Image (cartoon, rainbow, N blue to C red; front, side, top):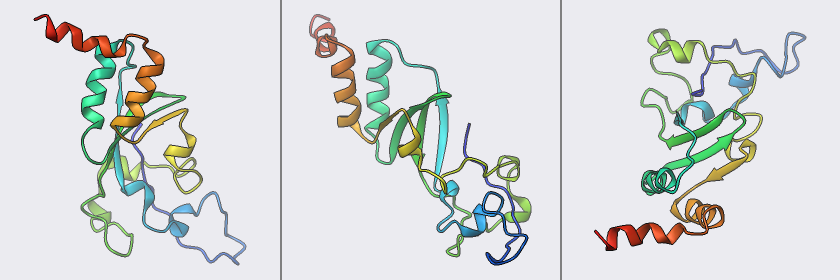
Length: 147
């Protein structure tokens, strides 16, 4: 599921109303949930599946991870409406996904990289994983040589 952000009213940390669980957005520096886009992908199983992912992760600012919900492509790209203050520049007209965002479990608590079962930052990370997973990983090139 893509990250979502919800509106929270700012409450001083010494206020009796202050609840760390409910007030994460006001304490988050840099709007962490507005720094990337995720896309859930079909679980890769074959060498061909992983080779395709190797091409995708070869692009700048594309990461990939596997967590309890499955496999996800992560595109590190800041929202174009994010102001230097960390606030949303189109807050009143923001998309529904932003309005529905819950910060119950968010990057303020733990980063995606630290919470994922598997996390791949680049080509070499995924290639190393594939070499362990598939004994014949390099043989995928042999098919091309015989064509």
